[in-house]
Length: 243
Image (cartoon, rainbow, N blue to C red; front, side, top):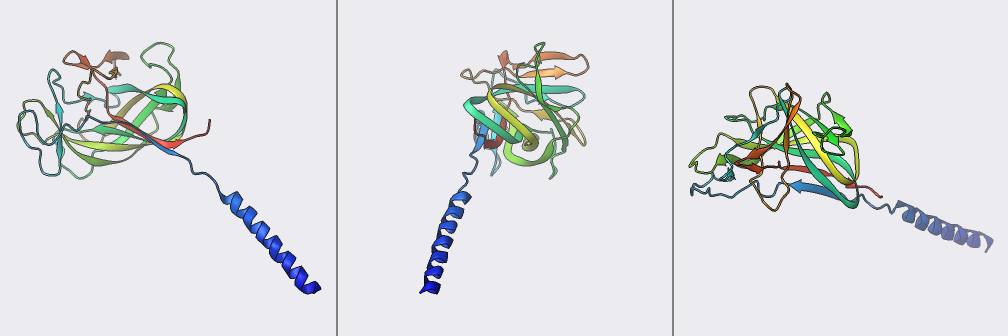
């Protein structure tokens, strides 16, 4: 009886210990997030002129009064900047950023951008006193790129597949952002030739306030096209942190 009683106690103790261990292993997974300012870049399979895009592709058509395919963001020459917002009550651990670019006439398999640099500011970097909170222009953050299946064209073109847009993946280690409005300033380099960043088709419902930094003169230029301010497509992904 004593031996049997001892075994029962051991079994009960083991059960209690097992339950406690299970409880301790229940850890909530971080909530993933994606900030996406891309909607509207693909304008469909048929252009304003009625030309169908190649099979499997769509157009990214610049419509009147705009008339510019894209803007220069080549490091050493120009840098670009645009803003984004971390919603109230949220805190982000940013893991990757994604930007969109093309090189006119490129038809290879590997997009030629090989370097990407960026900085994050807590206010408009074109205004004196802006504070940089992350990044630099010396650390290459480029990871990879992939096709978007979009071709950049101007309204009125009937057939132009020389500007294939690529989506670039950018690394952002140890970047944590509390709620608020931020500005990102970026530039990139290619192994050969110039490359450009396509702006959004104008949308009067959005605040469009992108700018370009001219390196040689250290001056800022408000970006507009056809008399309309523009903004750029980009995405941010990571996980939400507890406040």
